[in-house]
Image (cartoon, rainbow, N blue to C red; front, top):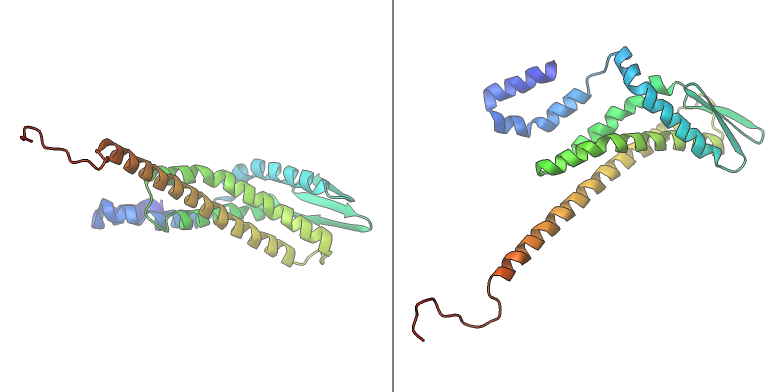
Length: 212
């Protein structure tokens, strides 16, 4: 509601042009508002369950590593080492989804883009967020398995989160770069087509009705 109120104030005072320029800030404001616990759990529990299952499958392919999923936890064993990762992920870690999308908003709106580019990148935000969240838990598992940190050490989780945020930035930046290249190539093709219409054989053409 507060975002709609702020947007209405900007529209009433400054008009549509300023409202359009303020759209990135309004989106970031929307992403900063916490979701109600029940609504958040209903939205996140299913994709996070799939993410944990995919992480278990990926880590289970490592040589000598056995990984099992028990609800929101992943327990692993490697030789004489045993541990748990992703503790309580559906309640805490998945909150980074909004951070991934916020990074996308920042990257996409660093320059004025056509509407079709913004729509395509908005559609790509969901798979990019899911991929980054998957990488986060996989990195967390790799660090926990191969470095043997203390079970309550927050460093593996923080390092994995940082890597996933950097990946989100790079993926959105790469998407913007691809769309810019496609747009510039289409403009170049249009320019070449316009040149083909005009005579370019280097000969002088007399105007119609002139006497030679």
